[in-house]
Length: 281
Ligand code: ADP
Ligand code: MG
Image (tube, rainbow, N blue to C red; front, side, top):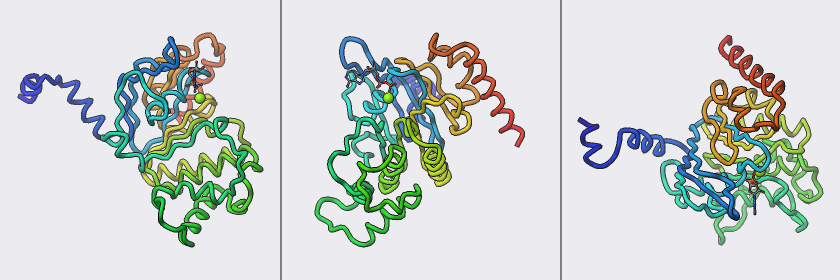
């Protein structure tokens, strides 16, 4: 009966099911195409980010990972596509998203103290007219503590190492108190201690029921760090739980000749091993 009614409304059961997914997911992308010139950087991509999970976006250099996220967040214009955030239009949900861009794109020649960078995360709460109080400073300091950077509060951000800067940007994202955290290559060029600190904070966020999306370049740690994976090479290659979507086949499809077959087999085996370990515990 519902099917008949749906058809009378011109809506298929598939469309109805997708509408439910869109309504319930922290982030959905449908039919997203982005082009900087003649050739699309992202072509007709659909993505459904699952609530309360950690999702890795994986693909070769230039695959459109950053572009997809920037277009989804309204930072670069899309040629076509629809984006929903917590079932609603992006514009109404901005306060629920914290975005940490790829580090290379940020220029910190301007002198700014670490604590002030973190307090930028509070601006939405502060508004333009409210004064910064001791409570705000304490909140910013707590966020710095969470990433192990409290001792650096009064240092200039430009004087920190890449890994330390990345932790500060995560602290700023934490200050926003968002529900969806989107990080573009947070582990690129950081030290091992920073990587450990960041992943542990992201796992805490997941435990708090938040949703985390990370562009990730290290294939060897995907199965260890993430629940879900989204493989892209201009087009979507695969999406789903790491166990099913991160396989030798999907990796080969995403990377083609750029990954040695032996490497792909190894990674597929690593993913399978991880699955069996998870199953065993
Ligand atoms: P990824 O993050 O997967 O490495 P990007 O989204 O940065 O990929 O880039 C996708 C494609 O778009 C690449 O071919 C890149 O050269 C191109 N591109 C990215 N940003 C710009 C830009 N601002 N202007 C022109 N081309 C761009
Ligand atoms: Mg990128």
